[in-house]
Length: 94
Image (cartoon, rainbow, N blue to C red):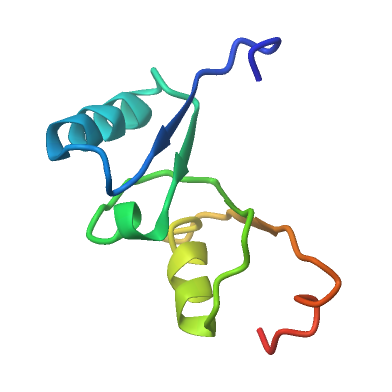
């Protein structure tokens, strides 16, 4: 990402609230290109115009999968969900 001049920032529930809010503002303004987030960070956060969600670890339930995937393609827009899976995870019911 560095080679392509993309700014990547990670965010987790361990970060203080002011840092989380500042990071989300930078992401929505385009200052940060890629935001890596945990499920706990994403709860209660509404970020418009997300066009791609990547599941590095598959969620344990279909409800969590739908919640993650639902962050993209809102209001009739299209979006992409990419999931990495091990050979044991490929048979999950969702």
